[in-house]
Image 1 (cartoon, one colour):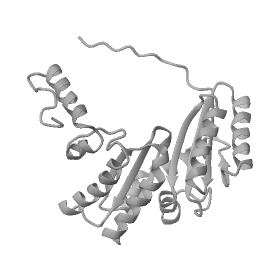
Image 2 (spheres, helix red, strand yellow; image 1 turned 90 degrees about the vertical axis):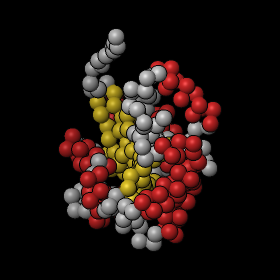
Image 3 (tube, one colour; image 1 turned 180 degrees about the horizontal axis):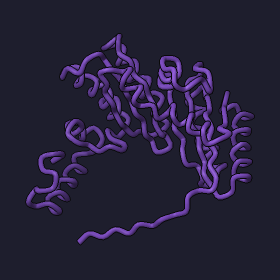
Length: 257
Protein backbone atom coordinates (compact mmCIF):
# COMPACT_ATOMS: atom_id res chain seq x y z
CA UNK A 1 0.00 0.00 0.00
CA UNK A 2 1.23 3.49 -0.86
CA UNK A 3 0.25 6.49 1.22
CA UNK A 4 0.84 10.20 0.81
CA UNK A 5 0.37 13.11 3.20
CA UNK A 6 -0.52 16.47 1.70
CA UNK A 7 0.05 19.62 3.70
CA UNK A 8 -1.87 22.72 2.60
CA UNK A 9 -0.59 26.21 3.29
CA UNK A 10 -2.46 29.53 3.00
CA UNK A 11 -1.89 31.46 -0.20
CA UNK A 12 0.62 34.34 0.14
CA UNK A 13 -0.93 37.67 1.07
CA UNK A 14 1.62 39.70 -0.89
CA UNK A 15 3.40 39.33 -4.20
CA UNK A 16 5.99 41.68 -5.69
CA UNK A 17 7.30 41.26 -9.23
CA UNK A 18 9.92 43.08 -11.31
CA UNK A 19 11.78 42.69 -14.57
CA UNK A 20 15.43 43.62 -14.11
CA UNK A 21 18.22 44.22 -16.66
CA UNK A 22 21.82 43.25 -15.87
CA UNK A 23 24.89 43.68 -18.06
CA UNK A 24 27.39 41.08 -16.79
CA UNK A 25 27.15 37.53 -15.50
CA UNK A 26 29.25 38.50 -12.49
CA UNK A 27 26.63 41.08 -11.51
CA UNK A 28 23.90 38.52 -12.16
CA UNK A 29 25.40 36.18 -9.57
CA UNK A 30 25.85 39.00 -7.06
CA UNK A 31 22.27 40.13 -7.59
CA UNK A 32 20.91 36.65 -6.91
CA UNK A 33 22.88 36.46 -3.67
CA UNK A 34 21.90 39.94 -2.51
CA UNK A 35 18.14 39.64 -3.12
CA UNK A 36 17.99 36.13 -1.69
CA UNK A 37 19.55 37.50 1.48
CA UNK A 38 17.48 40.69 1.53
CA UNK A 39 14.14 38.91 1.06
CA UNK A 40 14.76 36.64 4.05
CA UNK A 41 13.48 33.42 2.49
CA UNK A 42 10.60 34.96 0.50
CA UNK A 43 12.31 34.90 -2.92
CA UNK A 44 9.88 32.87 -5.03
CA UNK A 45 11.18 33.38 -8.58
CA UNK A 46 14.51 34.28 -10.17
CA UNK A 47 13.97 33.51 -13.85
CA UNK A 48 16.89 34.54 -16.05
CA UNK A 49 16.54 35.25 -19.76
CA UNK A 50 19.70 35.67 -21.79
CA UNK A 51 19.61 38.49 -24.34
CA UNK A 52 18.95 36.06 -27.20
CA UNK A 53 15.74 34.89 -25.50
CA UNK A 54 14.46 38.33 -24.53
CA UNK A 55 15.35 39.92 -27.88
CA UNK A 56 13.62 37.16 -29.82
CA UNK A 57 10.40 37.55 -27.83
CA UNK A 58 10.41 41.36 -27.81
CA UNK A 59 11.95 42.30 -31.17
CA UNK A 60 10.63 39.47 -33.34
CA UNK A 61 7.24 39.17 -31.67
CA UNK A 62 4.49 41.75 -31.33
CA UNK A 63 2.53 40.62 -28.26
CA UNK A 64 4.48 41.89 -25.27
CA UNK A 65 5.38 45.53 -25.76
CA UNK A 66 8.82 46.63 -24.57
CA UNK A 67 9.04 46.84 -20.77
CA UNK A 68 12.85 47.15 -21.05
CA UNK A 69 14.97 47.72 -24.14
CA UNK A 70 16.87 44.82 -25.68
CA UNK A 71 20.42 46.14 -25.25
CA UNK A 72 21.33 44.25 -22.07
CA UNK A 73 23.00 40.88 -21.59
CA UNK A 74 20.58 39.38 -19.05
CA UNK A 75 17.01 39.92 -17.86
CA UNK A 76 15.69 38.62 -14.54
CA UNK A 77 12.04 38.07 -13.75
CA UNK A 78 12.19 38.57 -10.01
CA UNK A 79 9.42 37.80 -7.56
CA UNK A 80 8.92 37.56 -3.81
CA UNK A 81 5.90 36.55 -1.76
CA UNK A 82 5.01 37.24 1.84
CA UNK A 83 2.37 38.02 4.40
CA UNK A 84 2.05 41.83 4.40
CA UNK A 85 1.87 43.77 1.15
CA UNK A 86 2.99 47.18 2.43
CA UNK A 87 6.07 46.04 4.34
CA UNK A 88 6.98 43.40 1.77
CA UNK A 89 6.78 45.97 -1.04
CA UNK A 90 9.04 48.31 0.89
CA UNK A 91 11.60 45.55 1.40
CA UNK A 92 11.37 44.56 -2.28
CA UNK A 93 11.94 48.10 -3.50
CA UNK A 94 14.74 48.66 -0.98
CA UNK A 95 16.57 45.56 -2.22
CA UNK A 96 16.30 46.78 -5.83
CA UNK A 97 17.51 50.25 -4.86
CA UNK A 98 20.52 48.75 -3.11
CA UNK A 99 21.28 46.68 -6.22
CA UNK A 100 21.17 49.84 -8.33
CA UNK A 101 23.53 51.63 -5.94
CA UNK A 102 25.96 48.71 -6.09
CA UNK A 103 25.71 48.76 -9.92
CA UNK A 104 24.45 45.18 -10.10
CA UNK A 105 21.34 46.33 -11.97
CA UNK A 106 21.14 48.82 -14.85
CA UNK A 107 17.38 49.03 -15.38
CA UNK A 108 14.18 47.66 -13.89
CA UNK A 109 10.41 47.86 -14.05
CA UNK A 110 8.19 46.91 -11.09
CA UNK A 111 4.71 45.57 -11.72
CA UNK A 112 2.09 47.90 -10.23
CA UNK A 113 -0.91 45.61 -10.72
CA UNK A 114 -1.86 42.00 -11.27
CA UNK A 115 -2.26 42.70 -14.98
CA UNK A 116 1.26 44.11 -15.22
CA UNK A 117 2.61 41.13 -13.30
CA UNK A 118 0.92 38.75 -15.75
CA UNK A 119 2.30 40.73 -18.69
CA UNK A 120 5.86 40.35 -17.38
CA UNK A 121 5.41 36.64 -16.79
CA UNK A 122 3.94 36.25 -20.28
CA UNK A 123 7.34 37.19 -21.73
CA UNK A 124 9.11 34.39 -19.87
CA UNK A 125 6.31 31.90 -20.52
CA UNK A 126 5.93 32.44 -24.27
CA UNK A 127 7.52 29.10 -25.15
CA UNK A 128 4.92 28.64 -27.88
CA UNK A 129 6.43 31.56 -29.81
CA UNK A 130 9.95 30.16 -29.34
CA UNK A 131 8.95 26.78 -30.73
CA UNK A 132 7.09 28.40 -33.62
CA UNK A 133 10.03 30.65 -34.52
CA UNK A 134 12.88 28.21 -33.88
CA UNK A 135 11.48 25.50 -36.12
CA UNK A 136 12.08 22.61 -36.17
CA UNK A 137 12.97 22.95 -32.49
CA UNK A 138 15.29 21.07 -30.18
CA UNK A 139 15.07 21.62 -26.43
CA UNK A 140 17.54 20.86 -23.65
CA UNK A 141 17.31 21.02 -19.87
CA UNK A 142 20.63 20.87 -18.04
CA UNK A 143 22.06 21.76 -14.64
CA UNK A 144 25.41 23.32 -13.83
CA UNK A 145 27.15 25.20 -11.02
CA UNK A 146 26.56 28.94 -11.39
CA UNK A 147 30.29 29.88 -11.67
CA UNK A 148 30.55 27.58 -14.71
CA UNK A 149 27.49 28.87 -16.58
CA UNK A 150 28.84 31.84 -18.49
CA UNK A 151 31.79 29.97 -19.98
CA UNK A 152 29.62 26.94 -20.76
CA UNK A 153 26.91 28.90 -22.58
CA UNK A 154 29.53 30.86 -24.54
CA UNK A 155 31.24 27.62 -25.61
CA UNK A 156 27.96 26.03 -26.71
CA UNK A 157 26.97 29.15 -28.67
CA UNK A 158 30.35 29.31 -30.38
CA UNK A 159 30.42 25.65 -31.37
CA UNK A 160 26.84 25.76 -32.60
CA UNK A 161 27.64 28.66 -34.95
CA UNK A 162 30.83 26.94 -36.05
CA UNK A 163 28.98 23.80 -37.12
CA UNK A 164 25.66 25.36 -38.23
CA UNK A 165 26.14 29.06 -39.16
CA UNK A 166 22.39 29.36 -39.79
CA UNK A 167 21.45 28.00 -36.35
CA UNK A 168 19.53 30.01 -33.75
CA UNK A 169 19.50 29.33 -30.04
CA UNK A 170 18.05 30.99 -26.95
CA UNK A 171 18.98 30.43 -23.32
CA UNK A 172 16.96 30.85 -20.14
CA UNK A 173 16.43 29.22 -16.77
CA UNK A 174 16.00 29.49 -13.02
CA UNK A 175 19.69 29.61 -12.22
CA UNK A 176 19.21 29.70 -8.46
CA UNK A 177 18.95 25.91 -8.61
CA UNK A 178 21.53 25.60 -11.39
CA UNK A 179 19.00 25.14 -14.18
CA UNK A 180 19.52 26.21 -17.80
CA UNK A 181 17.21 25.61 -20.77
CA UNK A 182 18.19 25.79 -24.44
CA UNK A 183 15.70 26.00 -27.30
CA UNK A 184 17.37 25.93 -30.69
CA UNK A 185 17.12 25.04 -34.33
CA UNK A 186 19.70 24.05 -36.93
CA UNK A 187 17.10 23.82 -39.68
CA UNK A 188 16.53 20.08 -39.52
CA UNK A 189 15.94 17.14 -37.22
CA UNK A 190 18.06 14.72 -39.20
CA UNK A 191 19.67 12.10 -36.99
CA UNK A 192 23.20 13.34 -37.64
CA UNK A 193 22.26 16.92 -36.82
CA UNK A 194 20.50 15.90 -33.60
CA UNK A 195 23.44 13.75 -32.52
CA UNK A 196 25.85 16.57 -33.36
CA UNK A 197 23.94 19.07 -31.24
CA UNK A 198 23.72 16.61 -28.35
CA UNK A 199 27.45 15.98 -28.49
CA UNK A 200 28.14 19.71 -28.24
CA UNK A 201 25.75 20.37 -25.37
CA UNK A 202 26.41 17.24 -23.32
CA UNK A 203 30.12 17.08 -24.13
CA UNK A 204 30.77 20.62 -22.92
CA UNK A 205 28.63 19.86 -19.88
CA UNK A 206 30.49 16.70 -18.90
CA UNK A 207 33.79 18.57 -18.84
CA UNK A 208 32.37 20.85 -16.15
CA UNK A 209 30.68 18.29 -13.92
CA UNK A 210 27.18 19.28 -15.00
CA UNK A 211 24.00 17.20 -15.12
CA UNK A 212 22.27 16.25 -18.38
CA UNK A 213 18.76 16.66 -16.95
CA UNK A 214 17.77 19.29 -14.41
CA UNK A 215 14.01 18.73 -14.26
CA UNK A 216 12.60 16.48 -16.92
CA UNK A 217 14.28 13.13 -16.37
CA UNK A 218 16.53 10.98 -18.53
CA UNK A 219 14.00 9.23 -20.76
CA UNK A 220 15.23 7.62 -23.97
CA UNK A 221 16.97 10.54 -25.67
CA UNK A 222 19.43 11.18 -22.82
CA UNK A 223 20.09 7.56 -21.88
CA UNK A 224 23.29 7.32 -23.95
CA UNK A 225 24.70 10.38 -22.18
CA UNK A 226 24.00 9.36 -18.58
CA UNK A 227 27.69 8.63 -18.11
CA UNK A 228 28.44 12.32 -18.74
CA UNK A 229 27.00 13.26 -15.36
CA UNK A 230 27.04 10.02 -13.36
CA UNK A 231 30.03 7.83 -12.54
CA UNK A 232 30.20 4.12 -13.32
CA UNK A 233 29.74 3.41 -9.61
CA UNK A 234 26.62 5.57 -9.44
CA UNK A 235 25.12 3.90 -12.50
CA UNK A 236 25.88 0.47 -11.03
CA UNK A 237 24.08 1.50 -7.84
CA UNK A 238 21.07 2.66 -9.87
CA UNK A 239 20.93 -0.74 -11.57
CA UNK A 240 21.17 -2.50 -8.19
CA UNK A 241 18.29 -0.42 -6.81
CA UNK A 242 16.24 -1.07 -9.95
CA UNK A 243 16.78 -4.81 -9.59
CA UNK A 244 15.95 -4.77 -5.89
CA UNK A 245 12.75 -2.76 -6.32
CA UNK A 246 11.63 -4.30 -9.61
CA UNK A 247 13.08 -7.82 -9.93
CA UNK A 248 10.55 -8.78 -12.60
CA UNK A 249 11.32 -5.64 -14.65
CA UNK A 250 7.67 -4.66 -15.01
CA UNK A 251 8.03 -0.98 -14.02
CA UNK A 252 8.76 1.14 -17.11
CA UNK A 253 10.77 -1.68 -18.73
CA UNK A 254 13.50 -0.96 -21.26
CA UNK A 255 13.84 2.72 -20.56
CA UNK A 256 17.02 3.73 -18.69
CA UNK A 257 18.11 0.18 -17.79
